[in-house]
Length: 280
Length: 273
Image (cartoon, rainbow over all chains, first blue to last red; front, side, top):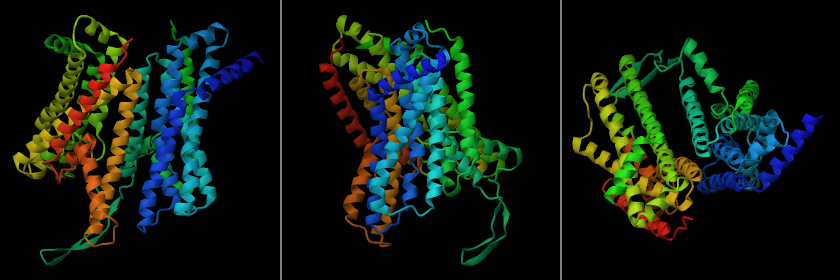
């Protein structure tokens, strides 16, 4: 009972700090600005007669949120160390696990709000510009849920990094690099796994002669165990943003499960190290 | 000024952030070299040295990876001056604000260009053999063209260093400057990617494939944007596609002058507490 009350008090204090945090509002502003920028670029294309499905623009929040939240989480959690708030919380009797979990919950909540800061302007202005979604609404809702869960998993990773290092600048650099690395890894995995097994037969004209090229094995195809490793990496939170976008119509159930597993693992590891950490 | 330069250089060489940047640059170089040797071994590549050397400015024509290494290095290095109060100490012992600013800027330019030169030297030396084996030729463009690309990109790097110095001066905080510098690199890369697709679309429209409104004016705007932004210049060089090569160094010099002028003006009025 006491433990639960402790987390509630911490959550109340953390949310109080969140609403007053400049970095939180800056995060929401950046997400909304990216949404409006996408809308402006799309409006130009639509005016030129190029049809753009709403879902193509809607889904981009999964790519942007991981990068923007890496900065937010490092600033928000890092401020606890620089202001001595972590030590104060422990001094008044909160457990280390409660302090950790309260920070994680607030970062995850901020992550979902950041996604909504992208989604709401996109829906409000995107539907009049691009029309309704061209894929079933159920697919969009499932994709959105998967996106929220992946964002939560990324926040768990950033919280772990921020709780284990007291240098705010270093944490910020590590978190942003982690976000970029996972995103670029996802783009790379997507391109490698999309390579077909065989290059189909084709005909082309060379020096006025019709040349027939038989179907042949594709040297770029990733086979065997290497493919399995690539598929596992592709499912990691951050990387899976690219997979979610490319399989928006029917996002595989394993993706949110992998995100939840990754969040549980990083939280357990972070809490284990934080329990023994010297807070000076 | 010479004392400041010497002190700054010593601090940079001894700093952990420079060591990490150096290791990251070496790791990136190793990645490019390994991929090149892998292409040679599997017979899946047909490129020449210009592709290898310009990958030091952008990977696959989209990702300015070395800029992502340089951005946090410069912002943490410069920001430490604020958090360690060394700026105030430098002024107390009699250096002018302009001298302090310019000494910092020179060291930043030197460090950024040095990392680029390190990449060029190592990747150039280690990829000659596989490139020769793959293509039977080292360069498909004249040597002068290759040198012009490298010179333009190095000047763009100097302009980028001037912009980071301005950012750190304006924010005056190591963490905020690191975050802003890293996010701005990604933002600039995204803006450039959009600009390149717009340019391609407008050019096809102007060629008569479909009608475009104000095609000439819009094309001039997007071209000016990618030619002015240092990230736009790196990406153009890494794509080996620089239609306005002659004006890119001029724009880099203009960006450097504007960035340094603004930075000096901000720094002269800044309250250093």
